[in-house]
Image (cartoon, rainbow, N blue to C red):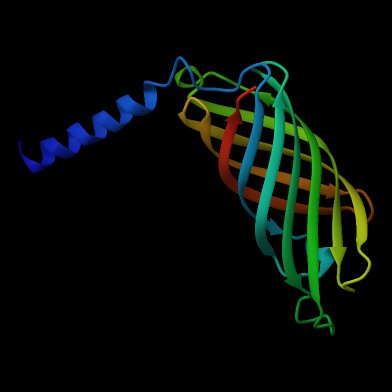
Length: 182
């Protein structure tokens, strides 16, 4: 077999394996979900802080194959920008509770786009002893690509709008989602 033909064969084999999970993949009623990953927070310019990344954890539950609920916790460490005469480190925490709607139009649920929206809190702690917690609302879009009937690669973007001061922080994250047995 020629080298070009073997690459095509390997590619088609991988696609076949990926789509062989079509009948089993996807979110479904009663599924508990755990996502572990990392995110990057593009902080609003009004905050005068450097953008930063860090770990992220999401716990979720699917009420149906379309509707679910998630709780996200993410952390990051950053500093004030150079124009602010303050060199303290800042510990940041993002927390969100969201309703999620999964679409299922692509490849019979192997690729599941979703939208989410909810409320949360951003905590910024430059003092190391007391955080400045601000309420927010958030909305986002993302996709889960199931590589196994209970494992998906996940990526999303969210807009966290802080109600006090009108700050928009954009959060990009990616991770691995596991549907836990119930």
